[in-house]
Length: 194
Image (tube, rainbow, N blue to C red; front, top):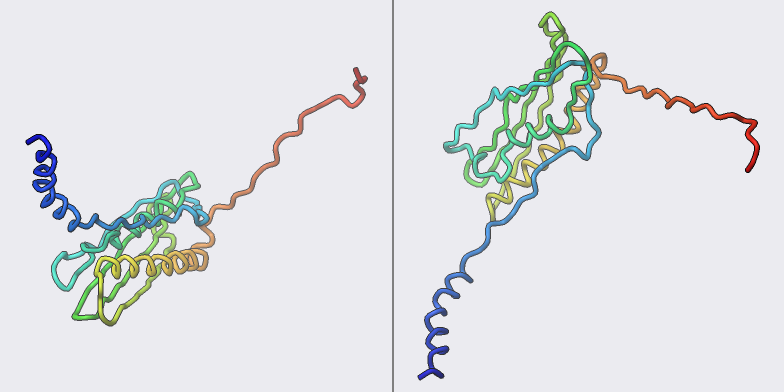
């Protein structure tokens, strides 16, 4: 009897092993971060983010199915790239659109942002806007993969367009980084060798 006991355990465990093999582990997607790009230093005391666009979460909106929602990717871009480098005033980064929609076999993506600079007296002193769009047409094997790839492509384009528009429209608000040379240490020149 003892010899057949391990065989019975194997037969009992077989359905569990087969069920476990059928389950796929969820695919992991790399976070979209931009701290490898040079920071954009603004001559303001603070940088704020406003989400003026809220995805609806109902059809045709599919942004909630994206492994990295466009709104979150834009927030990451601001956190990684914009730096307050001044003593007064503020910058407000507003997300006006960060949508992914699907109609049949067409997925459309749109990002629209504006960076406004406010002087110390809270008057708007300047702004820069950036917009990017992408679309995918055709058969979709994996919706999550397609949405992720679209968001990544839009963010690659947004980083370029956003920096270009800032330099073009807000150049006077960019902080200059001048480094002062380290002080020279004094050392007597007439020391006798030991």
